[in-house]
Amino acid sequence: MKEIGVGVIGTGFIGSKHAEIYASLEGCRLVGICDVNQERLHAQCDKLHCRPFTDYRELVERDDVDAVSICLPEANHVGASVDCAQRGKHILLEKPLATSLEDCDRILEAVAGSGVTFTVGHLLRFDPKYAQAYEYVRSGGIGNIVQVKAQRNGMISAGYGAGRGTSVMFHVGIHDVDLMLWFADDSPIRVSAEKADGVLGSLGTEDAVLSTVKFRKGAIGSVGASWVLGDRLGSGVNASMEIIGDKGYISIDLGAERGLRVFSDSDGWLFPDLWHWPSFGGRMGGALEAQLRHFLRCIREQTPPLVSGAEARSAVAVVLAALESASKGVPVTLGS
Image 1 (tube, rainbow, N blue to C red):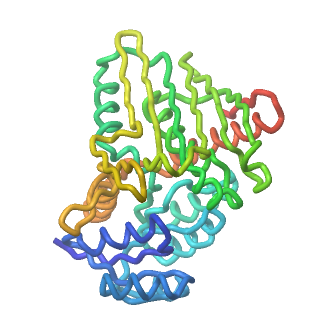
Image 2 (tube, one colour):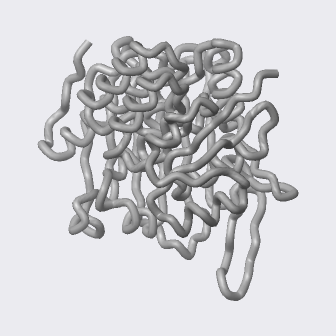
């Protein structure tokens, strides 16, 4: 099996997890990681035995780097993605693809012209709960989709930490927008939304957004996203989804209780993650490991990834329409 050399650009919360998983995968070598925070960068490189870089261009210019995970803030997605594509590097770009359709198109044009494998990190497609639900929907088990309902609630610390640079819909809600589009397998034609901003409005972001979507074939969807839950809840995120068909129904519940509860006097109740990036015996697994394995397999076998650039762009289009509707107080019609 050909060894694939990988670099990770950005080692914040999610980038550090990418790096740790790549370092543990067979058929893959973590060549280096890049971050502007030198203390964090060198600590991670010492732990994972790879090379540190403070300029991602130096990392991707290396001949032994075949692929990259780009885990940068949304504002930096375009430049890094275009540079990596032009250098012929396969790319896994953390969600969202971008925060404007113009930037989405710049990235996709660069990727199309380079011939590299490109995908966007919509992680929940690799979560077994959603993946199994998708298989059941595609099998016709619940008939034709009539409605998809989703709610995802994040912690207030995430709102304060990320709110100055993004919207709750791009940080939280786009997970369920992507899933809704995946399950519905249809074109959204109209989006309406309302927002609340009494807590985090001073940061330039919303407390919560509730959006509804009309699909071309008649189905409807709704996505609610918030990030004002108290951190003492200890769960990180609380989410649910219902998929209603004309012959059946699917319910997915990622509530506070994830099958494991831990209580301590200092921290109260904690609900450790068992699905997305759980660690067992010092090795990280879960949906993120499945996603990275899939990315490497697509490179090796030259097969299309589960999440295409076009699909990621569609999710961005719905989020932008929801934010426009919430701001203007009117429905927004999407182009064909």
